Image 1 (cartoon, rainbow, N blue to C red):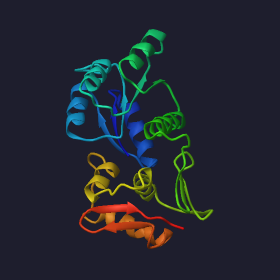
Image 2 (cartoon, rainbow, N blue to C red):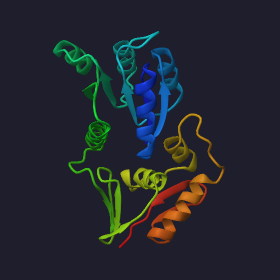
Image 3 (cartoon, rainbow, N blue to C red):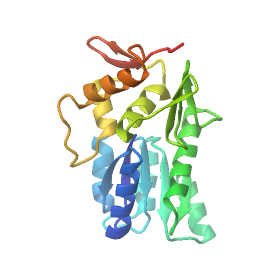
Image 4 (cartoon, rainbow, N blue to C red):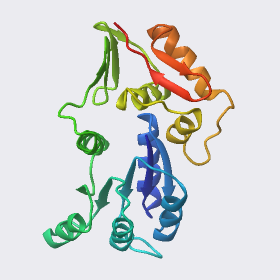
Length: 220
C-alpha cells in the first residue's frame, strides 16, 4: 500500500516514514498542506496520515476539500490536539480515525489495519486464498499451514494481490503501490519479486495475464 504522510515535524515525519517502510509500506512524505494537496491530485493513495497543524494549508481544510471533491481515500488524523471538540471536528470533517500524539507505531499499524478491513468490508484482518493465508497484523504468510519466509516487499506485493483476489493488477499499478518518492525502481523489480514468490509458493501462486498484469492464483 502507498501512504501519503502529511507531517511538518521533521523528527516525527522521518521516524514514521522509516517505521512504515520497514513494515513494507510505500511512503510519500509531504510537509505542508499545499504539497499534500498536489500529491493527492497527482497520485493514488491507499491511505493518508494527516497532521492538523500544517503550514500553508491546515489539515482540516485539506480534509474538507478532499471530501467535498468526493475523494474517499481513507484518512487517519495524527495530531497532538486531544480535546474532544478537536476530535469531533476531525471525524465530522471526514476522517476515518483520529490518533493523538505521542503514539506507538504498533498502535498506528493496528489503526491502519482496522481502516483497511473496514474499507474492504471484512470482519477479519487475515486474508486467505485457497491454501494461502496472509496475516497483516503478524506480518506472516502460511501455505498449507506451513509458514513461508518472505521479504517486506514480497509481503506487500502478495498483500496487494490477495486483497482483491479476482482483480488483475498491472505492473505499473504494483510499482506505484510498492514504491514511494525517491525510491529507485529497477525496470524488472516487480518481475523479480513475482519470481521469488513463485519459487517459495509454487509456480501457480501468481498468474501472469499476458499483456495485462498479475493475479493471485488459486492454490489448493
